[in-house]
Amino acid sequence: MTFKELGLNEKIQEALEYMGFEKATPIQEQAIPEILKKRDILACAQTGTGKTAAFILPVLHHLSEKASNKTRCVVIAPTRELAIQIDQQIQAFSYFAGVGTIPVYGGTSGAEFEAEKKALRNGADIVVATPGKLITHLNFKYTDFSQVEYLILDEADRMLDMGFYDDIMRIVRHMPKTRTNLLFSATMPPKIRALSKKMLKDHAEISIAISKPSKNILQASYLVYDQYKAALIRSLIHDKSSYHSIIVFSSTKKNVNGIVRALRGNGYEVQAVSSDLDQSQREDAIRKFRSKETRVLVATDVLSRGIDVADINLIINYDVPRDAEDYVHRIGRTARAETTGVAITLINEDDMYKFAGIEKLIEAEIVKMKTPIEIGESPEWNPKSRGSSRGGARSGGRGNSRGRSGGNRSKGRRSGKSKSR
Image (cartoon, rainbow, N blue to C red; front, side):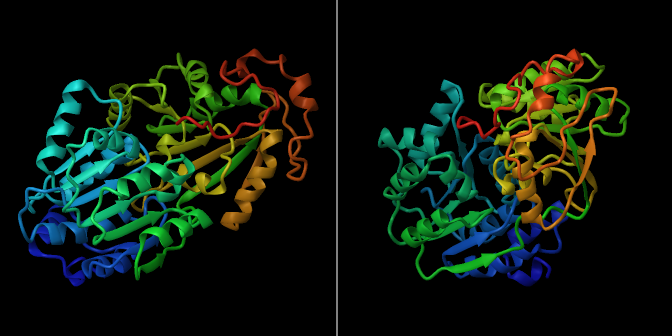
């Protein structure tokens, strides 16, 4: 289906044509007509399916029909990166529509805070915010949400995982009771169902095939002890000159700087992105990665749903993510827009059980390779062990200094999600 067939007004059509958008994705085909009818939505669609356009295009359609000096739409996102990305997309889609937007997120300077304050006090058509920072502004009581027509929660499952339920409900209490609520989530756990019952009325429910990686991603894995992971990563990218953009994901920010130190000094730029950096440093790192100044970006899962960079060639999972859905989001950074990409996961003895769960979710068996002998030995594949086979890790822990990342000396401890992203 084309966007012209969806009934969006001429101002939105002009922007879409300028950007080269012609055909709608499945989530856009199903969500846009319902939102044009101002119906509440509960939509399940993973990153990369075009869901931002699915919720913002029909909202822009309505907002552009009449001018206002009040805030009429609030979009809540779990991370600063995602809030910035959504704001940038809104600016592009609304180029000809005369609709203004303001991003509100943490880590900004005093001048930026004052700009946010001014916009919230005077009214901005669309506010895109992280929960915590918006609560800060609401506490000062100059924010007027009395005319809000749309409340949009993007990546609602991630926000609940991060403990933002109370903040979300507090923000909701500042909204008029009569409004359109749009909940977009990558997964549909029971807590999302519970939230939808509190917020939505007579809603449409949409579910787009989730948790299945693109067929254009070549997936593989290596069985490797932690102390050999850095050396293995270096060997994987050393002679791959055609791989200009590589992301290495770590489940904990504790390991990020150690991985960066281990990969530097090989003739290419390596940078980190985690919540330990302030916002300007994170934005600068992502800008350099987009412009290909930085070849390797080492990041926590804060980027797995909040970065939109074209032509990422390789994703390396330094460890297996705790949740199978997070695996799909991580590797979904590559093979975007009909391109191809490679995703490689490093599996230690503790992570085998989790990786077997990922294979079950995506209904595919991923090839498992052994660590090259010149780097070190490999654990045997035993997904039922839950990390009981640790002999190799302990006996081989000091056998090859090239393999030490400096960031993970745990030798067999579980690597779970960092609570602070």
